[in-house]
Image (cartoon, rainbow, N blue to C red; front, top):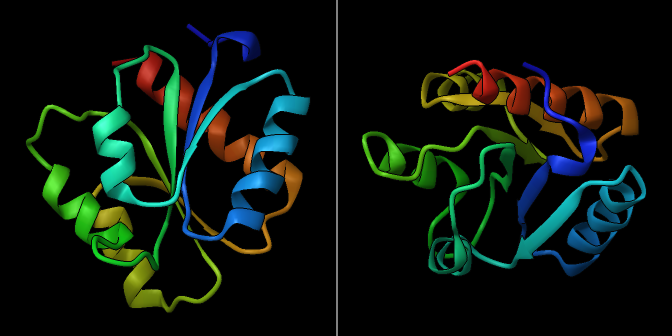
Amino acid sequence: MTAKIAEILIYIVDDDDAVRDSLRILLESHGMAVEDFASTEEFIAAYRPHPNSCLMLDLHLPVVGGLDFLASRNGAEMDIPVIMMTGRSDESTRARAHELGAVAFLEKPIGDGELIDAINLAVNREACH
């Protein structure tokens, strides 16, 4: 079953206000609901399961970074598809993110089409489970 755009909730975790704001504007212009957070700690405190959601997670965050978050959530009650995003990475980091369950790994700046494709993949993958 494919989720309808209006039913999709995107959580964004990035410590850069400008990145969060621009992603929010883009995603809301596509009719998606957005909740954004400056840290994984803020996200964890506010998270509530939603059937058609995904998490856009920055790789480089203070305190608990993206890979650490992915590693710690394995086996936890927080089962949400994750799209990892970063401004700088290497092949081993990309491979590790996928190994830890990231659905997609996007390089900033992220193209609109690439982002929407990754969200559709993440949300529709979740709907199949």
